[in-house]
Image 1 (cartoon, rainbow, N blue to C red):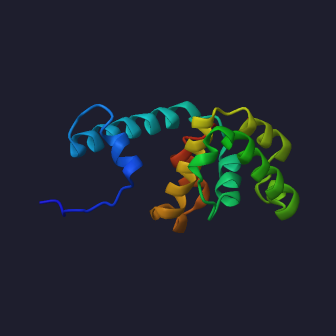
Image 2: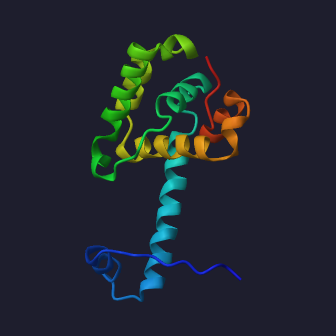
Length: 149
């Protein structure tokens, strides 16, 4: 049997969850299924968009980075800025042998959902069993990286 979990929600969140007149638990399950499918779609959308080295740089630059949902629509530009800063201030382009400006432009061209997916995959890398293994093979698997040209 699964453990029981409790959850505290604001009145606004409770009102959102009752938007269709469904029972609370049913709506939570439906919304979770929708979120899982949206994330799966995002993962497919960015598959092979990044080389292994680019994805490693993204994992490096976003290590410990907090996702702020209120900035969802500007995530591509924020991601590009993080890459630019990491390359300029921390030498990440040299470390990973990546064209920093090209990667920043690639990030800026992502949709907000694709940029969110990058954050999602980086979090999976750092919180999963992967961060102790070979970074390149783990990142290639998680990001489904393109083969370098």
